[in-house]
Every structure is written in structure tokens, then in C-alpha cells.
Length: 206
Image 1 (cartoon, rainbow, N blue to C red):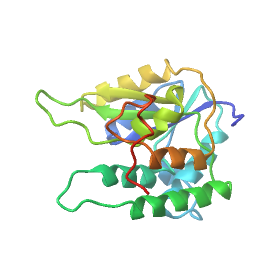
Image 2 (image 1 turned 90 degrees about the horizontal axis):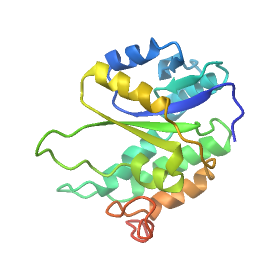
Image 3 (image 1 turned 90 degrees about the vertical axis):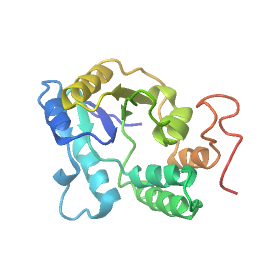
Image 4 (image 1 turned 45 degrees about the vertical axis):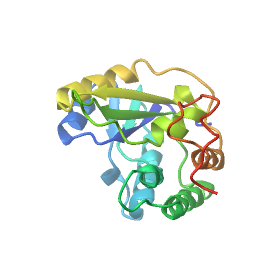
């Protein structure tokens, strides 16, 4: 468990530059971007891990990190379940999970206090959202550690929703090990509600 002077939150989603800038102007929030990482850290995991390490030393009510060392894991998990003409198997997920696990075991990063998922609200008659790693397996293992801000695409609305969610974060048990999180992702069926008895019963991975 982290013992840092602030609440560190990873922002998962696709926030625009204007939304990030608006959030960063809040007096209670310090925004850390992946390009703030040192030059010795290369690759997505390295840059995100460096951003989290930098965030751990900042004293502020909230530190919002716009990078995630599990980002590639989340993308590969989503792609596994995407309905496409050429279905994708689990090989990419296992590769990305192994890379993240290696970095985590080497103590390159710790998980943040919270994940905040920025989800754009679908319009009338819009398509259903694709399966989401953060709102699926990750939220199923620690519901209080994953918050979601469903917003329109306007930057001002996105920023306001992020700040509102930061003020309403709930306490709960700390994360399990990353090994346990990866195992939960392997056994999580997207058609089941997170936290339901059926959530871990279906699997794409043998």
C-alpha cells in the first residue's frame, strides 16, 4: 500500500488537451503527463511508471496522472473481445500482461490510489460501448478503487466531471497483487456485470 502525501489517480480514457489543461488549473489538482518522465524511461510502461513515481513525491490533495502502465494490457484485453471480421486471440494480452508484470515485480511502479475512467456518453441510438478493462475486471476486484465520469465530448464538461469525481472518491480495500488482477482479467466475461457471481465464470483464455 502506498503512503504518499497525496491521492494519486490515473486518468484512463481519451481526454483532450483542453480538458486536461482545465483540470490542471484546479488549485487542488496537480496534473502529471507522461512526457514529464525522465529520458531514461522509454516505452509506454516506462513513461507511465516514471510519471507515477514523480506523482508519488508531489504534495497536493490530488495528483492526476495522464498515463497508465497497464494501458497496453487494457487495450489488448478489449481487443480480445472486440467483434471483428478477424477475431483476436489472447496472445497479445498475455504478452502485454507479462511486460507489465515484469515491470511491477521489478518495482518500477505501484498501482495508483484510484483509476478514474473518462467515458464519453453515447448519443441517442449510439452503439453499445466495447468491453472495458477498467470497468470490467479491474473494477470487479476493487469496486471502490475505480471511478467513472460519463461526460459529453466538450472539454469543459469533461473537466467538470473529472473534478466532481475526484471529490467523491470512496474508501475501500487496497488493490490485490497485479498477478491477481491479471488472473481476474483472464477469467472475466464481459457479458457479466462486474461483481456478480457470473463475472468470473466465462473466459476466452484457456
